[in-house]
Length: 64
Length: 157
Image (cartoon, chains in turn brown, yellow):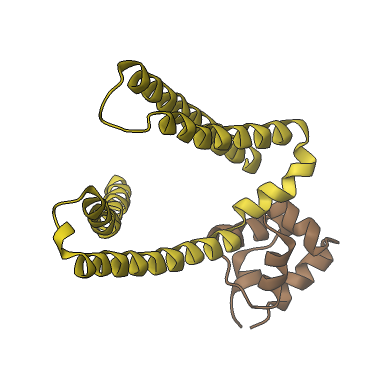
């Protein structure tokens, strides 16, 4: 399932996938796969992404 | 932090392979000087030391470029530490190991059935048997180490 909330939060912070990947320490492809719902990140990576985008785990990763 | 972790790994690789290479050279020279009957071709051990020396040199070059050009090396370091790529590599390693384990089993049983007079007699049979046995035992040993580590972490809480 696609994760549109990460994409929206990333765009709100004016970050490209590459820039977000650099901040959290993964490849751009990994961020792309997370946003398209084709990869399930570990909890550590989820937390790093939340910190980078200034959001909570609920905001970005909880299912509606 | 990624850079620090990568440098530590490279340094560890470099020093371990350097030590192994030096040990092999020393053993080769000693066997040569003492003219030991243990091994026929003693110079082969000295030549074998080139492999760990080569790996050590490769690690040193990697470390040099990581320290001198950290920005250029960052994509390489990131791809080595990306959790998704690590998971893919682990899966590939596991499948490769299973294929090799099967191949080793076929080689062992094939050799045993085709040349039965070599069973328990020749060093080659013992070496193949040793590797075959080790491939199963090592799995169990490493698994028990991992379980012990995770249980210890659990008890510490």
